[in-house]
Image (cartoon, rainbow over all chains, first blue to last red; front, side, top):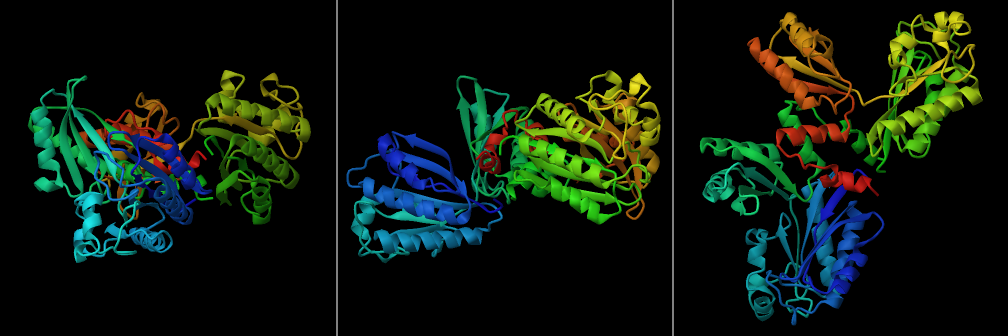
Length: 298
Length: 298
């Protein structure tokens, strides 16, 4: 399999395992691998990670949305996490041999089909957005299901990209394409939370630091270690080694060393190769040189 | 496929493409991927790289040896490269989910079968060796086919591990298990060959430097760049980043910078992850966190 897409649909059910199981079963098609399913009871939400070739991933996403629409009722759903639909958000993420444009096309096809076959309003977001303000998921989701229900028919800003200007118990679904999100933390050899917070403020994009980097300072209370916790939202813009080196340099300025770093969840092969290529001054390093990747090509 | 073995059989034919093709065809079994085939006319030798699950790789190796025995006649073979057999040497190399002991067992099974079914003497080498001196391929191959033919019946040092104490036109075959060999070069920002040679002497194991590292200094005449060319014979002992940093440090002592490095041929995923883990102080990094590796697990 040399074309790989990740899809991370978020469903508004994090308490009843039988419903999440039914959705996961709908997602399991030949050519699709379900890598992870995280249920959160407080958020009353599940986040499922799928990878596979583009065509089966697209079909799986549709089937997951159809199943959630049948089983989840937004009129009775309560949870801490913002949401507008039974299937709340569905990002397609290029991993290998697939462009962002390919993922945008997937989002549009699935969105059109969800509207046509399931009569659910669909909003396109991030790289698939049709209006600049809709790149932002939070903007689309403002006021959540309850506000959208009131406004969708009359407010032109709320007009969906596909489907009806009315909303049923399945709510609306946001579908789009984005880069792979790498969750990456650097632990500092200090128990001074302020230092981690300062470093986070300096290195993140919002503070004029590294592009496509979000960062916060945290305290790991048990270990008494301050941590810079990052989301790298586009590793092709700012990679893991660049983020690590930036934290290390800022920590050094404050007389603090880096203890170690940690990766939460998954990382694409290309992001690992980027680290190796940079640290070895090895610009020619290619995935085709990695034995295991050659087997995947079959 | 979560169990992967590499096999790199060397055959004593590097001129007649039809014979090499016949051998490659014998190697192509379901579950085996032929990654590379290098024919060398001066050496009159071909080096073929296969990867796959242990069982099909073992079967492919046997079939390749059987085909070469039928098509290659050592009595008429001439070439620059030392050799004792039609199939000269067959190493099994652990790549993923397979131990060195597994590869030793493969070498022994194939060796026993080659002796029994093909009546060819077999010597076990490197990790599969049954005598310390036979860890060394050059020792087993001393005097080549011509000397072995004279001595095999009478010299107890020449007694094969499997098979007859006599030799036919297919010669004898050396089979064993070894670590993955990484061919890795570092280019220096100098045209002074002596500096590359000095660095090579200092960093290599033979000179008391890094364990499992062989190194030589070369001149890239077209680019006017001196190069430290290395073979890392066990990256679990000395990895790529350690080798790079050693060359960089020795170059710096001589006032020379590293231009860039290059990887010749293939590298196992674990060796790439090792570089990333070291440069990011990320000891927890695991192949299971790499998206593409999760797909391979199917």
